[in-house]
Image (cartoon, rainbow, N blue to C red; front, side, top):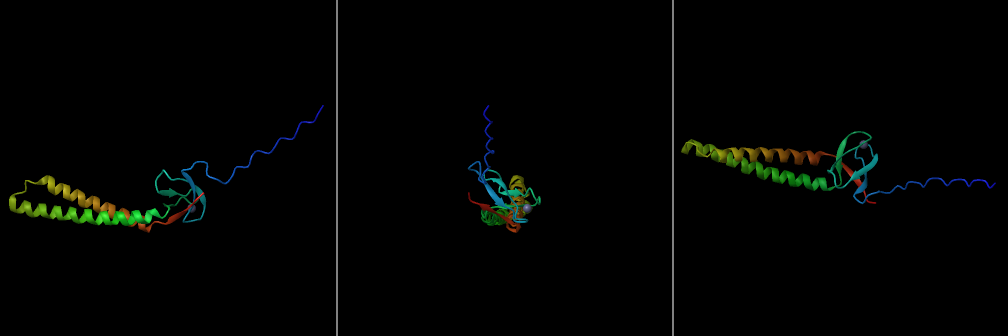
Length: 130
Ligand SMILES: [Zn+2]
């Protein structure tokens, strides 16, 4: 009776991404490395320290873009609102849609401005290229 051959050890799981849209991210707060899918949001939460950060440097550019769009939308929105109030005083104000739209635009501009600043102040986690 021949002895049974010793089973080979299971293959070692390589330190490589399984999917092409996955990559390693090093946490900006604690330097813990974890998986990140490029198709998901740029905002990543570290499974180790639970803090959120941005994956990749594109967040900085997006932050600047949001600030610029925010300022433009805010200025245009406020101008439209002020114009509406001036028109309302002189013409009796039958242009409510214009005033309301301007106010909403100003508000969304302010929100995107805040978002842009938030993006800029957030820490950036490094993406490791496979
Ligand atoms: Zn962390």
